[in-house]
Length: 108
Image (tube, rainbow, N blue to C red; front, top):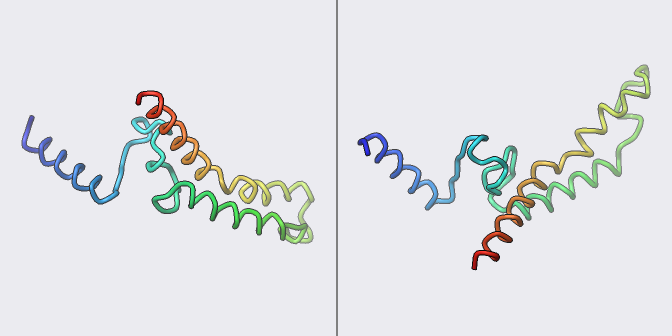
C-alpha cells in the first residue's frame, strides 16, 4: 500500500469515527442510509418526521394562489410536485436503513 493510500485510509477512518460518511453515488447505490442526497442531519427517521411535518403544512396551505393569476391551471402541477415529493430523499434513507438492519438481523 502506498503512502497516499495509507493516508487516505487514516483520513477516512477518522472521519467515520466522528460520524462523517462519504461515498460516491456508484459505491453507495442507495444502500447506505447516512450517505443519501439531500439528507438533513444524521438521523434518517428524525429527518423524515421533520420533513413530513413541513410537507403536510405545505400541502394543507397549497392553493391556486401558488401560480400567477394569468397562468393556466395546468401549471399548478408544476408547483405541487416539489411539495408533494418533498420527503423522497428522507424516505429513501429510512428504507436503506431498514433494509440494512434487516440484513444484519438475518446474519446474526
